Image 1 (cartoon, one colour):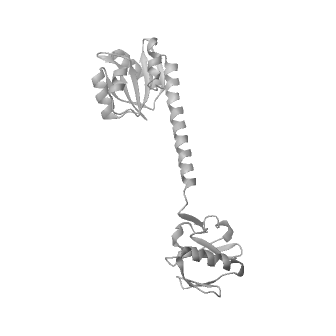
Image 2: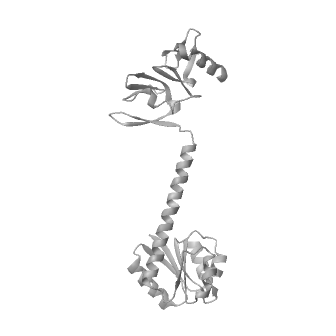
Image 3: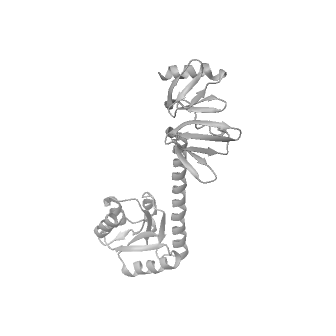
Length: 245
């Protein structure tokens, strides 16, 4: 629903506009009427509408006076007037449309449809911005699908992962073991240095969960497990641990 205020100093015209809106735009909810500049400013700032129909020539000024005095301006604006010469000035205020009196129902319907289109475009831009923002961030959790449920696990809860064939078991800090029917390589892009390291073909560990390691190639984890370092990973692992220190 669009919360709407009609600013019009002729009562018969505002009533006619209300009836027309009921016919062509049932999602419009008229919440107030204003006949003067002062009244319009107070109502707009207090009620914070989604849409305002603004007559240009009012009792004690113009619709432009209203727009210059209001504090709240996050609404769609449609000007209504009998004077076409105000059109250029009207669009300086980013009006959605400019309707000449007597208002044509088809033109009114088109103006409302234009608002819906503008809102859709704004929503799409917001969604795109959110997507780009999310893509720019390093994810802090991972989703692990099993037959029972979809587990959302924070990355720092993972002590280590152990893979066997097409299955991978995640060992967590709270003692849980979650087995998924996917190989470890499916998760390597998310579980990468500096927090994680693929220490062996079958093992990936959380660097922060290491208790100790030996030059012989055994790593002791804080869940009391012992994980072997493969021969091909030793040099890279020791270099990484040196950088950590």
